[in-house]
View 1 (cartoon, rainbow, N blue to C red):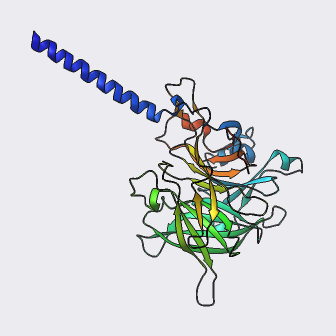
View 2 (view 1 turned 90 degrees about the horizontal axis):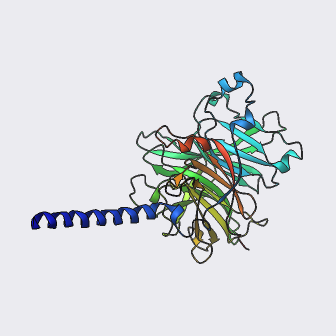
Length: 374
């Protein structure tokens, strides 16, 4: 009898221990139960599906032509605030979506054709878009494309001009590979930004790696990395190429499972330091920090002394105990003023939760819970 009582007591203690451990783990991952959920969660302002901009939903034939087609991968707001340009990883098109300001100037949504018609039905692998104010052109990066070596993949950057009034609205200025090797095609560069170095007057591209340490085999969750690229112009003997000049990392306090987009808050003069946003698709979060220039390679760094906050995207909160991710496929981000972000989402994957379907292939306007200052 005593042995049975001792066994029952042991089982009871073990059950309580397991309950406490599991409860602690639940609290660790359930951001809705954290004290700072309200202050660290972005507020949805409005959103729309991408298909709504390009397809008349009342026309059955148009719906048949575009089933699940708008797998948006990045977005950028024009400097005049009239339009957003959206790129897609599944097609060679540039989406033009007008803002409310743009509509007051008779702007219309439009899906622009890529100038190379042979690529019309091909997958683009576009993952980022950035604006070059010096030439008023845009850079579009392909995540990673095959090379002559079957085991090596490299990203490619198109420089394009966009003019909706032109008979050929998208024109390719140049196409240059990035001299950085990946060993897989679907874990390359996920975001792109253009930045000016004030002291040297040189311009660079910042390419955000999808995986921690730029390595899809990495098992860490706090090694987000940006590769700084400088362009080597083409000559009579060689093609143009973007050469890495160094890398710099997100603060180690940022724990993301992946990295899906980057956007710098560009002040009118393009001076640094300024705010920067980096999104994570798998974590459904946005890190807001500051970027500054330095005098030696890699020439830029994220400052750990200024703003450094991870914000949650809104969760399903019908029941706080659920707190499920519903923004599961965030792939692009751009600033809309200093305290708002515009995000775009890719198509939900077949193995994702049902909550993910509602928000996929859409455009989302979100506000920061606190106000950023100069």
